[in-house]
Amino acid sequence: MANTYDLSGRTVLVTGGAQGLGRAIAEQALASGATVCIADLRNSAEVGKEIGVYGVDLDVADPAAVEAGVAAALEHLGRIDVLVNNAGISGVGDPKPFLGTSLEEWNAVLGVNLTGPWLMARAVSPGMLERQDGVIVNVASVGGVLALRGRGPYCVTKAGLIQMTKVLAAEYAGQGIRVNAIGPGWMDTPFIRWRLEDPELAAPMLAKIPLGRVCTPDEIAEMVLFLASPGAAYLNGMNLLADGAMSTTI
Ligand SMILES: NC(=O)c1ccc[n+]([C@@H]2O[C@H](COP(=O)([O-])OP(=O)(O)OC[C@H]3O[C@@H](n4cnc5c(N)ncnc54)[C@H](O)[C@@H]3O)[C@@H](O)[C@H]2O)c1
Image (cartoon, rainbow, N blue to C red):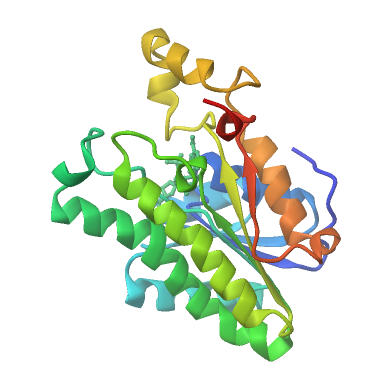
């Protein structure tokens, strides 16, 4: 799907780009004129071929895999102008009380949702600093500002990612790197599709959204592209909460 932003000549790396929001971001970045690489746990090359972008498999929570994956992306792209930290997991298994979380699950969610974006930012920032030019967009969540019952570790990590966004933005302001987050509300991707497909689970979710519907990945991708574009030059360190007004009311 085309969008309103021009990223001609820019290079974009999107984590978790093999499906859902990441794939939509990759497709829109491509349509905006960018050269794009997706990085996902698996199937990156296959999906990349399908949509016309480069794909590299990596686990964002694994430091060695991030180093190797970013090196492979750099070889293909030449440089990385825009990093989209989109890979994320809601948890491991069914929702559960926060303190009923196993240490394994806690570490897994922290690894993907928080350590991952930090490792990725650490790997791409030297080139950005050298050129004094770069944009990082972190995909947070409405769960970073609201407590979603049953998904405690997810909410804690997304809140941490919003704070990481501010820390990086403040530290790199004036060095050509802008860092923002986007906080989608519920979005129609494989992440929550199983809930949307069950009317008994979907109805109470939809009732919480003043706009009366979940968002589409394309709507959020459009906003990510805006954050990556020169039009957002004065936006830095913010979380663009795109939740259909869910967080405005109870
Ligand atoms: N769908 C929603 O309702 C919703 C709402 C708010 C925020 N988000 C956020 O949006 C982002 C994208 O989610 P989505 O809805 O497209 O989910 P999704 O599950 O459809 O896609 C996530 C992608 O990330 C990849 N991934 C997971 N762990 C990874 C790892 N360790 N390394 C590399 N890639 C990994 C998966 O393989 C998958 O392709 C996530 O950060 C999620 O938290 C989603």
